[in-house]
Image 1 (cartoon, one colour):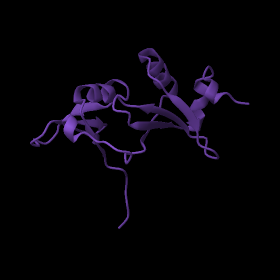
Image 2 (cartoon, one colour; image 1 turned 30 degrees about the vertical axis):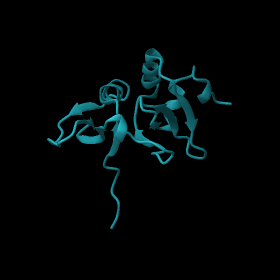
Image 3 (cartoon, helix red, strand yellow; image 1 turned 90 degrees about the vertical axis):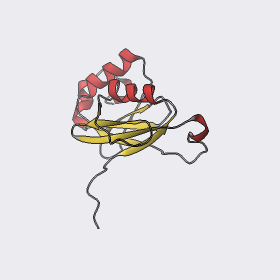
Length: 137
């Protein structure tokens, strides 16, 4: 067996509307077709792939404890535009640069607190000279 790619992430939430809006408005995913499961949820598409599956749960069934997803990541283009959008929305973010590779990671959290990082090619760092985390020493 050989893995080919990440297919999707499935997230349980007690806040389906806010989570769906976040993934649409902040990450630009599209709320799309979903099988007729016997429970509420949403599938958010990245292009033709349903990359984020949300399942609505009651508070009693909501995830708890310390064993949670650490993060998941998307590769993207358009770093400057993405940072502008985050600032406009008042979203909190943190930028990291992968040592030795230069990949720019914009770390954000969805309304349920799930950690997501959006990865950009190192060449895009030059497009945001006003970002202190990307200042060239």
